[in-house]
Amino acid sequence: MSRPLIYAHRGASSYAPENTFASYKMAIEMEADGIEIDVHKSKDGHLVVCHDEKVDRTTNGKGYIKDLTVEELKLLDAGSWFNESFANERIPLLEEVLELVKMENILLNIELKNGPIFYEDLELDVVNAIRAYRLEEKVIISSFNHYSLVAVKKLESKIKTGILYIAGMVSPWKYAKSIGSDAIHPLFMTINDEVVKECIQNDVMVNPFTVDRESDMILMKNIGVSSIITNRPDAGRKVFYGI
Ligand code: G3P
Ligand code: CA
Image (cartoon, rainbow, N blue to C red; front, side, top):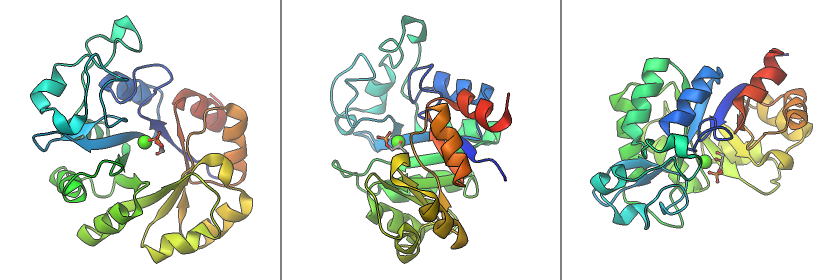
């Protein structure tokens, strides 16, 4: 049986501040196959990588990303909230992450945070950024906003999309096919071997989140998922590689 791929959720975010270069570099050192990131848009239209729509929780700043310019965002300390030793970390831009992904030849899962705050042309700008780095084959775009996934596919059929959801769904593979998606990204405890089997048989990948416990990683491997999204890529490596 082949092993699931390992995507480091916001980087190796159990060990370093989420969505920073420190957490991405740690994930790469831990030999994750890819990283998962979250994207918003700044006041001046730049693609900004941060989980929340506000900077309050993960920086020393305050306010919505949509109300701040890149210059203002780049002044913020995005690491001290986690540990003083990460005080130099800054909020990354999508283009900086794409550069890293290209250089390190890893996979990238971009989550479009399009709602409850909606960003004009978010899908178009993200697709264009991926095209600029010729990373269409290395990226999968996911979102809880499934209209965004349909929009991405219309713009660029080569870029894979994954449906994020948190509740049980009947025949998710049928829904994925109906909106042209390549994968489901379910909350891991909502799936079982039947769901996974039907998806894989119908060429729909299954990439559950957020799988951090080793026992859950083993369970996910045994039911045949395509990838796991985890805050602990080192644990994934131990479970799947035995090292
Ligand atoms: O992509 C899986 C996961 O990141 C979705 O939830 O809230 O961690 O962005 P959240
Ligand atoms: Ca996410």
